[in-house]
Image (cartoon, rainbow, N blue to C red; front, top):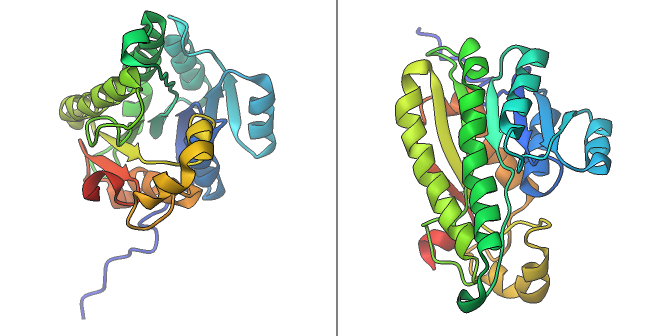
Length: 258
């Protein structure tokens, strides 16, 4: 009798080296802590010393860096490469949003969001290509995971967050473009497009309209940490090795059913 394939470690991320930008709060912290609990070596990059210390106490490695500065992506890439040699998973999560009425939307709100949400993941990925390629193989490619949004082209947001929705649509297209170009280097590139999750970015709107937002989903709730950790685990593990260029909504069906 032919032996069955071994699927016991299909979703295993143990001993993978993972970098999560913006990994001290919100979705980034959920993913970082979730992968760390499964045995991955997780490095989080963030700005605030107190948040980084909390992450360190949870067993995460930390790098303090302000990614909005021009040379920060290269600094972070050099630091991670020097410390770990190779990188198995890069999760480009750091981001910002801005809301203002159309007639009053400021250039500062446009530039800040587009810069952090689009420029930084592109140049950080570029700078980390040698580290990502070092341990990559056809059987076990390295992974780049972008954090997009269902507001990035999967639906039109209800809030006047013009630069945010434009930036996340750009992230989704950048995901596809990089996926095509990096496949030959055994690097996959996919995006998670979250819906509503509890985070500092979402606090105000959830406090004001949380019941309405939850009701938009056929499942009647907002996202929980295990929802986005599950998606990140899939994309980082052997289970996701043949997926690239995909935008995966993790939103309880809001973008596809409303």
